[in-house]
Length: 340
Image 1 (cartoon, rainbow, N blue to C red):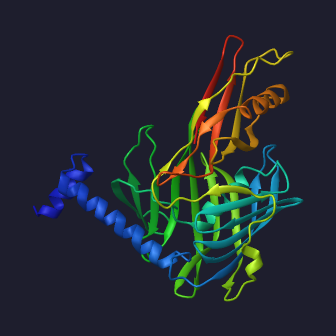
Image 2 (tube, rainbow, N blue to C red):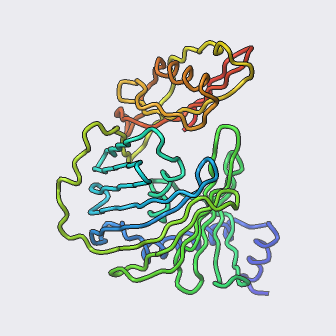
């Protein structure tokens, strides 16, 4: 029996030697690199473009909402995104080390905030993956190779599936880690068409625990050689967030006064709040991401506004950074759980 067959049997049996693990890691990285080379229209050498898409998603009340997404991309340090859902409007502008975001409403749907990640296709930032296995799927309409990572501290795993013939990324599974639970968030890509030297998907959809939550269709993808420079100026009143390509450090709470249990409330509850910690360690732009009821929401916002933090950092320098906290109200005690 050849060495290659012996390694395959060992890996299939879960008794993978070091050389086999290295072979899996190397092969998975090659699959990812090839897919990026094929479809990453935001790579350093890619031409500037304008992208327009229509999308739909399932709202909080299980209604179907629709909107439009527009992106003008010149480089990683010069881009603009706009998302419109009826009369709700979000503008985002990116520079070398900052992102500026302006919402005209506090009710911007959380699921619509996932559009940039869906459109970017590939994982962003300096994240690295330690792969555990590569499997072949031949019983589907398209033969695939899927690379799966090792389980993390909360048993979370990532999975990337590639077209066996072209090498294009067809699907990605990213665990959505929350304070109380974890869900599987999967995105799928199809109908690849040529754009310059790249092949980019024109249809995409995301599922949360196998329930469809977000769909998008690319209506236009065209070169944008000379966009108006005014488009890339930070909008007046926009929230400022840092962008770190180096070593980042998350904000840490240093002062967290507890609220009183709301008068008139009869049951325990919990409230999730998102905020931006500025470079002085003060909370800004507080938003409710998971309501616990109006009495609890108002009290949570008023109290978190008084909190203070050690600011987030990039390569040791203070940087405005987004943070999420959950405030749990109990008759006996109040618990605070910061999360990122």
